[in-house]
Length: 515
Image 1 (cartoon, one colour):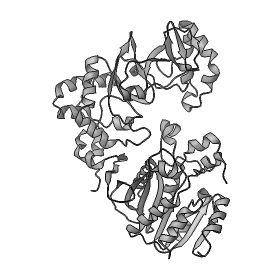
Image 2 (spheres, rainbow, N blue to C red; image 1 turned 30 degrees about the horizontal axis):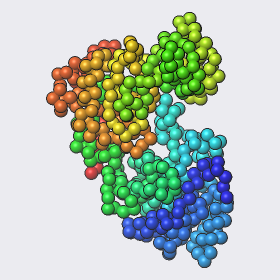
Image 3 (cartoon, rainbow, N blue to C red; image 1 turned 135 degrees about the vertical axis):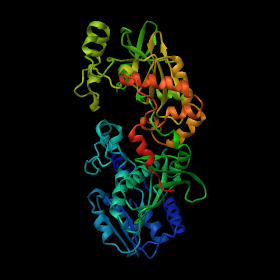
Image 4 (spheres, rainbow, N blue to C red; image 1 turned 180 degrees about the horizontal axis):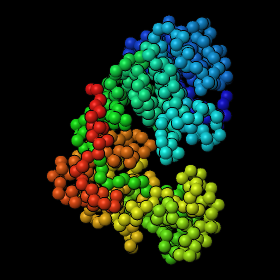
């Protein structure tokens, strides 16, 4: 019926009828009693069949972009069910607000929208996308890179909630758990009248043969002034609560209850957290050492100078505690604005190597390399080349911080999946690392971090850890004062009184969540 590339483009993971029936049965226990059911992406009709059985007196409107699926639903489900109306319709062209405005009574919006990202569609040249706009409101660099990527279902669910507005309705949709969180964050930030919201974790491997954290998002609309929180449960029931997340200021907090117990640690970091080096050409720019030579990712043995080679650690290394590097990286610059042609004279063999692999390096697609020197890298500065660092993986569930030093006079660097702060001495690095690995700090971090996220740890999260307040609570004020003052001096080129508080932080703590 549908080709593999189309299956990707349309996020074609058809809901098993057994799961659809479980969902609609669960909705009846919530006293959902719709006059109208809307299925925006009905596929072969599992939710249509299950919902009309669970709510036989409700009218049903079903839509799908695939005419074969529409015909299948008409031929196999609509017979003897005049209350069902099915229409071929591109979701992104439908005026959902007008549809909902034309409906009377309580509305149930139910279904399973596509599980595919906009970048995933771009990779196959798919066109099943909304009109391009930065609906998430990212600015600058974030709008140009990964933060601007989103699940198509995220856009769809936001559109549906926005279109429902003040209507009394229940939206019950299968989606990735991370998508559900982003949708609720957007709704809360933009003042959508969303009432009680819950997430119910499902086994995506069992139902869809995909390894992804997925859930049923249930959100009731048309209710103003509700708490900006949502509780996550295991399975389609309320028997096993796992955690409650919510909005604090403009950010989502993973465990809002634990966060409020440790809110004194939410402040400013004093150090500046950085992401590691980025080059987007691992096969050319990363090496292992073989005697006097090095071998690149293409398995070519090359003879280049050590001048621009640095030991490097990756997320897996930090997460597993493997902090003795077995890889090297070629860093062509110490600052993104450096002229790379100086390599020609300082390290001629390295320059010849870069030119020989110029086609691959020139083909790097990221916008960050545009209008920069040829063979440039990103994520480098004075901070990259300090002799000591405290680093953490951004990709793993492990929240362990590691002290990273130097080898044979060269600082160890980390890649762009890691985050770090720069330190001048081993003692400083060990002290700061000890603060961050303390039981108190780890509890605070876990209240902030969604461990099922693609990148659980981010700079935004790390910047919330107030190292001074943490040191105060651990009885280490005096030593902390010395290091925090030095950190500010290193970053800004001048001393800064470590006890001054930024106005923005003070304002953040005045923002409260309704219990």
